[in-house]
Length: 244
Picture 1: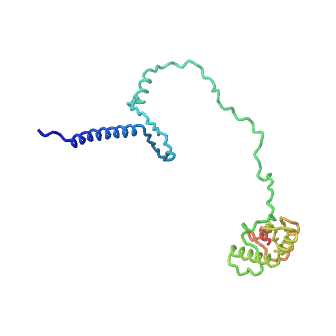
Picture 2: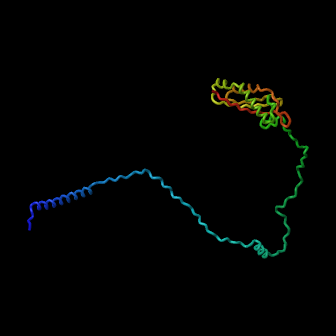
Picture 3: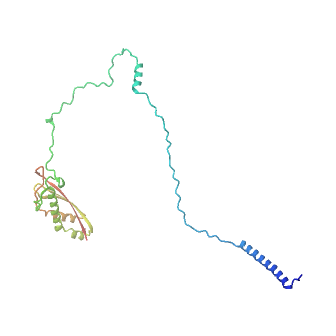
């Protein structure tokens, strides 16, 4: 047999050494992996949506009952009528407790229609312009065909007069009034067609005097009629203007 050489012996020793070194490295790697700490990141998904409360539904319990049929009423009445016995009427007749009393002598005699005093309704009651049968005719509105057209023409004429003659802006600015000013005016067109009984309500007495002055400039009109009679007609006029 051939004797092993020195080189073969060294190779055998080296393979054993390499195996031991590899084993040691594997053990150290395994030990290092056990000793390592792995950090786990937990993602934040924010607030979860609220959970709706459970819905309860009441289910009624329906119990079906068999209908109970009563006996006919007529049959019961017959059975009861058969049980009645006739009893002789020996009791004397007694007066009814609720028997009406006989009327006594009338203290108040009948009223004679001639004795009734009727107070006549005054004919001089003013009528509002909205309820007048024949509205007053303002000069220049004679061609109006009906009552509504006369009212519209009259309103237009009065508005034009106030716009031309009323000096409310100067008076309001002179006395320190600013913004929108409102004046309520009411006057009467009497039976002769003249304007009188002027009533005003304004933010300042000077404005009231100015409105009265302008209303007195209105011309004489054809008076209004109610039931073919001349009557006083009440006219209401709101005035609004803005002070610059």
